Image 1 (spheres, one colour):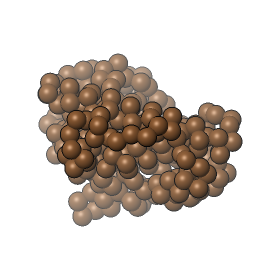
Image 2 (tube, helix red, strand yellow):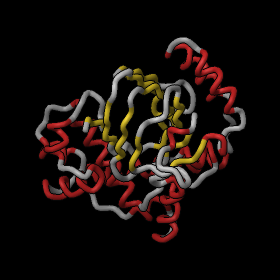
Image 3 (tube, one colour):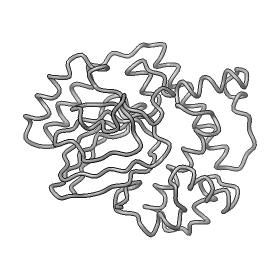
Length: 268
């Protein structure tokens, strides 16, 4: 499988990367939670099977040219004979900033692109006609630059994201904290805010962030699994394994034995 990645110029607080993956051979993939939402453009055939992501009454969102893949909290399983897909990987905050949808409405769910984007046919024509990844990236960059954001939503998103960063750092440093002290709201209202912007409760949001950080560290850090767990803020090995299994449905050791060159993507 060929994979290419590009960090976009616009909205860096909300967009992580634009990617493209292609394969001409039959494959099966297990995709672990990434802590992101993704706007997916299917430039090839639909996948033979998708388990774990529901779109309306269908369990195969790749039947659509475009769909918004929501925040998933469990592994996805995909089978395909051939594959050509582009995606814009975004922070969970982007669900509300770009599409006006509370992130908790997208948990383990997907929404067809035609419900979100008015000129979807123009996007499809351009992405299908352009000859290579570089030109498709240039076009998507121009498209993203035209997005107009609500100023109040933008500021609120930046504020709540900074609160999450502070909480994650305190967890990493082993410092006790109450998340509501950072927001200035009651515990209940803080819980509602996190569900709206990040899709999960404050505690679950921080745990997912720890999980995805550990996945990346396992690919680029030579430390032992125990030390990696401690570096990302887990209390002990048991806490690390329990959190990892909640999202990956496997232990860190099992993941390390199976991992590929792509973080969070496993053959099965």
